[in-house]
Length: 396
Image (cartoon, rainbow, N blue to C red; front, side, top):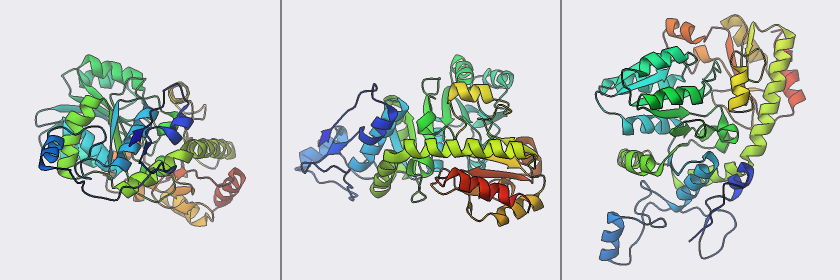
């Protein structure tokens, strides 16, 4: 197969279409789907040699690797600026795999407190259950990071833009503190998106995405990916993932490859709509607060502009009470009530009663997840139609 490599000098938008292509002898234009769980060998000696050390275009079992999945991994690594990548069955398989593969009993991980509910579960319940020490900090406080990392940590973990309160973490500053303490930086970069991300350049060692979100971007399939050095991906992560079974299916990999071709266009259009909605809601005044990194009123606005250059595709706003939030959601006609984000369709959710429902009230209060908080992911609808639907539902 022909592995066409494309230089980093090409724009991300171009690499999202071309990077990592492996063509078969048939010269297909669209990436081929290799729907096979196993691979044949010419001889017993060839099988032995491949199990000993597989070459770049040699595969053993779909749980270990697959040509279609390898194309996705190469393309994502090219976009993110990493040496390698491993595609997983879901975003949470990526998060848990990245952390579980590198940590063992007695190790210490320091994490920002503002996280998606499932990420909190992995840290608070799963890692602690296996003897890993976990310390939580206010992700925007460098003093807290410095103090928590000082005793000696193996990893620092954070969402570069937190879900759902949209706190922006200073990647370069936290990475500097983590590296000084000997810790690897693991960054969940979903809200920043592969379009705007510069996380590796800013100091992240391992970057994690739920490809379910902006990479697919059309609500079709679950997926995730972990990106980092070849040493981390192949020597630390891959043995864990291939033995625990969290690999992405070849068909899903093909869906993600097709999603990457239009991702840049989609994400930029969605971010433009999100900024327009945030500005309109702030000007309207009926929301108690509007949280969007692209607004000058956001506490980390300057950092967000320097770090990712965009406010992203998601905004949150507080309508004051659960009753008002529910009435607003029920009054929407265009925006869909669901708990995904990064979709071609605009989606709205009430975090306190859905994604963060199981958190104790005190913890929700500490994270700023109030009863009136609403999270809205902008889709590809005409911006004026979105504005009319959202502003029209506020009187409810």
